[in-house]
Image 1 (cartoon, rainbow, N blue to C red):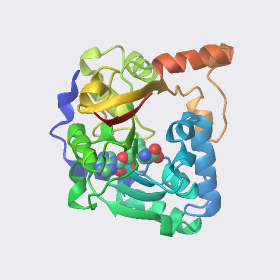
Image 2: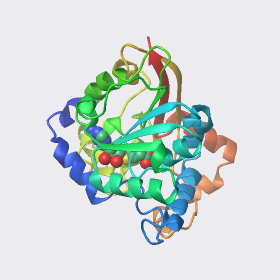
Image 3: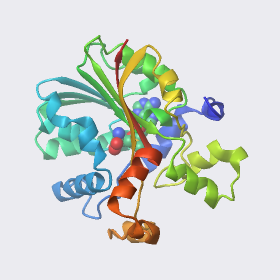
Image 4: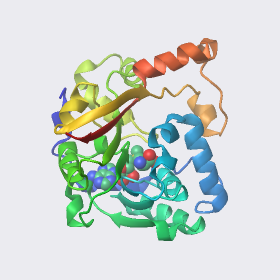
Length: 278
Ligand SMILES: C[S@@+](CC[C@H](N)C(=O)[O-])C[C@H]1O[C@@H](n2cnc3c(N)ncnc32)[C@H](O)[C@@H]1O
């Protein structure tokens, strides 16, 4: 896979420290952290900016089913799987993320529907009992671990031929990567380093791989991909967005919505796939 080796020697503790310092989406609300109002706003904002997530996750499809979420972060999708009646096992590397996710489960009265584990997904079976799940779900996680293929090998242990695996990883041929490379003065020889530095809301992610429609097939070796699509271009002015205002960047304001949606399907940042064991 193109340029993927620069992250192989990264220490998982560096990854954990990065996500502990600022769990994913933690600033999606300025309400008091850990309150119902805070979590409601985090969810509203996440699904407003990333409306493809509920469509991809299909929360209602998993009612009464077993869901294993790898990399739950602060639990936005986790809560929704549980709300819709799934029995969820949620795993993350980051203690700070898990603490909020667990608090969230309590606030919404869903503790009984979710079991949380702190684990490195590269060694999942050392911590999470191996049993078959109907759905293994991992959104925006596996590209942040030094050895993504190890996670996939672990995930397979929790699947049988009926299980579904839904995964989102970052898309290399994306608008986002285009903006990263152009704002660096087109330093293509440093592309992976630059992507990693700028992939998240906070700079300096230690590991951020990107994938193409071809290389995700290699990652998912032994699985049959049943659905694959690309989505999500962030259209808002970042400074206004940080102040909870949704003002599109001028060139996106000029684009008809239909064209913007077509661009997302071509150059979106999120490469989403649904797969089953072959
Ligand atoms: C971008 S966040 C996504 C969180 C969540 N899926 C969401 O969509 O809000 C990435 C998450 O992956 C977790 N993560 C990264 N590497 C991991 C690993 N090896 N094992 C478990 N979790 C990991 C991080 O701690 C972080 O919470």
